[in-house]
Length: 500
Image 1 (cartoon, helix red, strand yellow):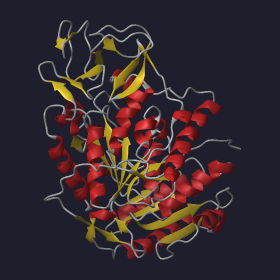
Image 2 (cartoon, rainbow, N blue to C red; image 1 turned 30 degrees about the horizontal axis):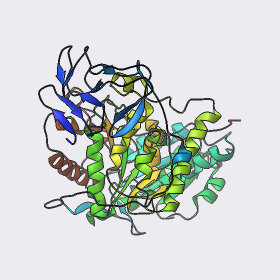
Image 3 (cartoon, helix red, strand yellow; image 1 turned 180 degrees about the horizontal axis):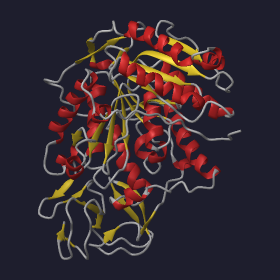
Image 4 (cartoon, one colour; image 1 turned 135 degrees about the vertical axis):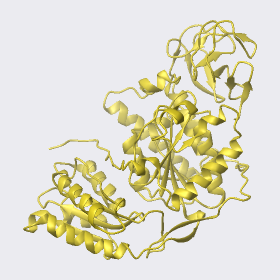
């Protein structure tokens, strides 16, 4: 683990300039912490003051401010929501400065440079070969689900590879909300992990098949079928015929070696705790640097969880245009909060606070560790496909289902999801859950794919990132994730407007 660890009392000072340290085990009154005497019990994952912090002075963690002291905080005291307040930076104070990329140190010797994937007709790589049923509107959700269930039961080779992705939208939507629904569904129609897609419509909705086709643009006619339920006598029977046609085509697809440079991996965290920014998120950062080194792509989203970490993240933009678009994306989400009369520093959530995260910046600086040291190459609007190799930022909220859906729409083949509290959530793309602490990995073994908590217990980061990289390659080659084994697949579409 990076940082300054006092093994005698199990705490971590992440950066030399920090005036707080994080408890890796319970701190008791009288414990000596890096020269400071603990004034009371401090829970695991929470912070202890390493020096006197006067009221109004900055509280520093990760080498950056996470807030201001709401009152005098004496050395050795517990530092948390009772004595720290948020203090987000004015975005107008940020300006583009060319990034001096010294490059992350990455060791690739002995690691696989290929995965066993599918090569689509347009040249893109895929890691799954599934049948997806997509309703244009909520009214046909049951029909879509019934067709997917029939596909799993009746189509040879697709017993665990036919899914319906239902949602509550597609009608009575106006403006950008309808556009978001169409963009997301269009992105899924074109996602390489889908070997065949059946689009099911009703016929009278805003997002009727004719309108959706206009939004879709070009598509692979051999891999996509459309069913308008109001136009046929027996919509279920017709759907089975169309799904069977798609299965016949997709069943001929075979895995073949594909360079790891073609992988696109989404980066997400949810249910964060005090260890997220110390173990699992830095591990994903090292993975992101490693995949970038072999020519692959990673995607970082959760824009509200960039609030407070803007200076650190935006200082790595590759040019002034990318800096401007990234700043505009973050500013737009701040204005979204304000427009609805909500504070921009509402994070962290109750579970995050219980786990030791105090302010939005505390959470954000830990969250953005997932981006590693890589240069930010691009900024993607919501539900738009990846365009650049390396690290891209994706516009989407922090909400877990919305964020993993946005990463899938951007073209993620696989999603790495760190968690300190645990979640069974899946998405259309395979989701690998990475536990921030070993207790969670043991308790919820049916949810967790990798235990990054071992890093806090002395495991070497270099060894862990190599293991995680190999796990991603294995997953891309067909190994099923815990959420896939459980059949947990869902989408959530962002909404910001009027419903008729």
